[in-house]
Length: 180
Image (cartoon, rainbow, N blue to C red; front, side, top):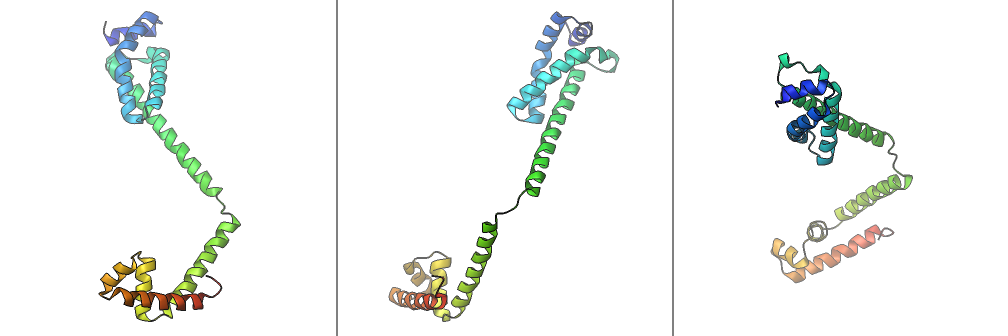
């Protein structure tokens, strides 16, 4: 039997016709829902909702307006889009609520302020180094180069770089005093 005929019988409460119609449309319904919803578990749930709705609302099918399969797939598409919109709205609500209820702990704020002050203090102390010392220290400690790599980048002997680093770190330690 064709889906159109089966749907008319389902509208009359024929369970056997519904079983046959279910076999015809469940695959296409799931495929369409899966493409829209993407999540397999959600897709199965939405597909079941569509097929349940099909049983309940079969009497609304009008063969003069199109095929049964088109009508069923329209139901499926609408239900799938509704699920996606509902999920998106719930996620957005949760995000807004999370933003509204986010109050950083006092310690976090204090730590951020303290870290900012320490960075500024280190910058001021770096400015007191000679340009050559600052260049060596910056390459080693901020850019992550080894002493040997600093020597290669600056085209200097390794011993010279080591001396600059030692002198620069000594001056930094003196300048920072209570921080280190």
